[in-house]
Image 1 (cartoon, rainbow, N blue to C red):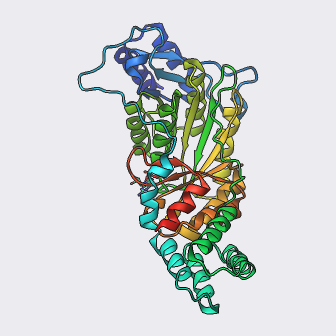
Image 2 (cartoon, rainbow, N blue to C red):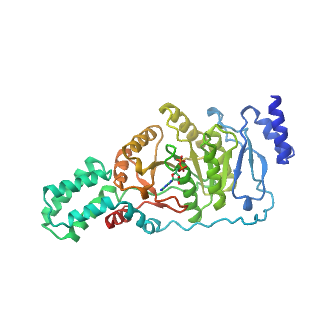
Image 3 (tube, helix red, strand yellow):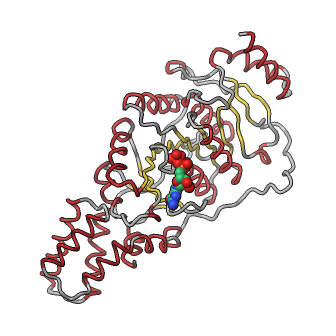
Length: 400
Ligand code: GDP
């Protein structure tokens, strides 16, 4: 308690607060989380310590929500601070047409897939052995045995019925079949629209190492590039580096980042405060990064369930986006299944498609989890995240 008080007084003096700084500390001493923010310093103007916005009636207390948590983020009322020397807030490019622009990465990495298929089709000798080889190629590309067989059977029938031997025509049939297999009619819309005075909330889940935090940063850039305003919530509190990473992404595009200064802080508290900050700032979307430890299914369920419940106390969770590493094949699918069992996934973000010849995973992951791939990661660059489009994707891999 004494130590708590000393920390509190030091924080009070350092932050330069008056009562406004002390009150949240005292009120939050039972469940203290020093939540702070990065980014938007320039627009927001300075840093201050404010009392945490109150939870709505009935609050989040039922699930241990932090309505009396000390929050440190920039004060709305402070005058705009001049930009620091060399500090430039980037304006990322709009997302439209990005997959088409990045198709070269797919074409390059998918050579094994598209190239082999096309050379087989153009050999002019579509006998049993050739069809078998086509099926094997599709399976090797992680399409899944069932879908690969289905596609080959369909294509075989079409070739027989039309009696065509023309390579361009067979290629056209394959293109159509692949697009249909991926599902051109699946709803891949990303729900980012505000709800009256509340922002949309996008929860990003997935196993560590899949590119989850990077994807949160890239997604913020996509939204900012498309003219939206964003708050990022660093609810992966088990990895200090994740919050730092997110803060850097946020600062680059002027998106506020709500984070905890304490490792292992309650992720639900951070998520709650991120949504509050989003409401206060009137932004369009709040993107919440979560921890991806696959400790136990119950642990994961508790953690993600709690985050979701806390957010739903004062908002909606519009998207639960599962980040999967395209290079991990069956293992990735297994992990995905666990997440899909504990939380209602609304879309998949498939990362690292630039580094694999296994583009067929788009089909198998959708079949396995019953949700559409909405975005794909095609590199480590800041703007290498694109909305997924089956036609552009298939054209790119068949170009290989
Ligand atoms: P997390 O642990 O899931 O949050 O993973 P990180 O966001 O820290 O990313 C892990 C690594 O994957 C980093 O080196 C990223 O640059 C890399 N990464 C993320 N997305 C992609 C992608 O689409 N393509 C490639 N090649 N690398 C990626």
